[in-house]
Image (cartoon, rainbow, N blue to C red):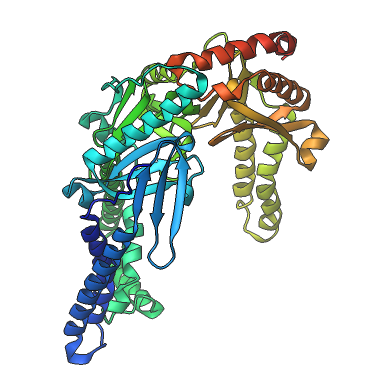
Length: 525
């Protein structure tokens, strides 16, 4: 065992700054309120100073009481001021080691090191903060210890090679980033303003929850608008709409730039490395053999211009999401090489697609149109003539949309992979390798049992894969084929790095063992 180590001493200062930041709003509220009378400014400053002193003390004690130890087979972290907690994570359970540099820590050259175990959420292990060089060294060390352990387990004596810079598979230029932002229309700025309004009534005499206040303001504005001519009113409404669109576009561009500035995806012998972020810089490495599946999505408008986004489904999580974005704004010809580098392949002209059950299509169309059909009755009785055409038209649109969307709900199965596509206006494609599926389930509700179709749930570590509306006979055939692959797969070898050929060898063994069993079923489907 190595000696216990502590995080960077500057972490104490960062902890104190975080405490001061949390006390800013209460201090401002005191300064503009009646608390303390004429000395409320002094009270507000005292609150800020007290928060700084307490924050510094707690941060220092917490820093002194937190240690981490890199052992031969695990990493151990001990923390706690009053009650102590010690957690050990074996290297073999660490799916990824990611580095994150938020704006303030970046000024001090510090990063947050996160050890992702695949459990997600609070079950992951994190160290805040380490020097950038120390964080990179720790990531390299953990990776080498893990690979050394895997090599000793498999009997391979190959030495761990130093990581090269790797081949750049995808990058976002500033010009493309601007184009990307134009498709990321967002009105989140109004949500932020709404949150700030919650403090207005605390720091001022304005009561924002006074209904009479807002009614009077609206009446005043209405009188002003009524005094204008019709053309001025139309021009004002158009200017307001244009302003709203401009704010939405500008917000989307800013959010995209903050998140994806300098986005680079590289491929090395160790896997995929993704770096991105303007203020908060993240550096994530995803081992290629840990990619469980891929998701290709798009948006309502960007689909019309041929733009798509590619994500890897991994055991580790990415910002509370089950998928890692590796090409968020790309053409299909740019996505194909990345998919191939991950060990997958896209569907082609030889892919034999199967649609969802026509009975499921009919049932879904009827259920979606039913609320509008029920609303038609009271509208036709009590509303003026002509209003009944509104729910009637909506019911017709719901039925037509479902009938048309059925063409895009399909799935396919080949020797190595399972494909699924859903979505009418912005289709989403999911691809999973059969080798990494660990379970298959057929689920039926009362209506599905009566009508003879089911939803097939495929067990995929780190993500979900469901195929809805499969005819029952085809669902059972699909389950049988997947189970044959599962039964013939040696899962103890799937975690070996791809360059060692373990995954390919395991796949060949599984396919040859299951070929005689599923070839007949595959031809039947």
